[in-house]
Image (tube, rainbow, N blue to C red):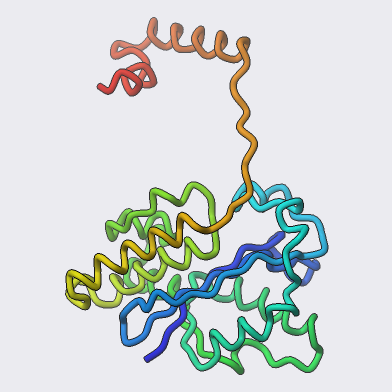
Length: 239
């Protein structure tokens, strides 16, 4: 059984408004084992990226300026996913964007459903945990999956995290499926890939002297009215 865990990043929320895919990340699972094979690319969308989207994934137009267009990597991508069952968290979003890209590059292209099956892991999580939060961060916390490197969304990183989540959600004990040596090699390889993914640098804005002074004054006000003092000071002191 071959499965491919897939995630995308985009310029916005709606392909019907001309928004495009700018990153694709895929991780392969065969017979419920991670194979360490993956597909990953950044794409030039030939349009601006919404500010709200940049705040989520940190990918800028300047970073994508020299990246290929979708049609240039389309065949390689389809060859990787063809015949597999795609595992996608909130599948209609990603499939909708990929179908739009396929239609845009060639009006005769078939949609994703003609190339592979789709399993929506969000629906799976909602069935297992009705009435609870089921986004990736909430599920990582619930199942004890390490997502400390997920300061920003990224297609390959999120696909790797989702692969771990899917195996845990559908088996309960992922480690029982892998020998210790295989498991250690898998973790090492995945950590290495996460470190190799090129990401655009983000601008760090430090607080001004006036903002620091205002912050300190506010903490002093809290100290005066709260019996336990400011939680911020307690946290900084390691209490």
